[in-house]
Image (cartoon, rainbow, N blue to C red; front, side):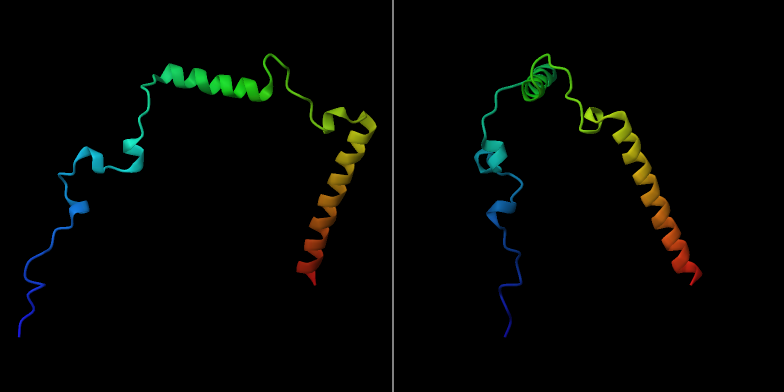
Length: 95
């Protein structure tokens, strides 16, 4: 008894190197207009300017709108929190 299915390799049509162009991937079949690099950059910049608003200055952040004393308090609180965490870690290593 011999197996005849292992004697000759079977060719699968999708793995054939001589495929027809209509058998490509989905992206190969999408018809796209030719576009230069300059055109692509122009379209990208148009999209960015329409998202930000044409000719507008960048909007200030939340911290920029605060009073200077509140900014100083926020900075001080952040520094105190960082020092407290570092001292806590040192305490855990010392114990």
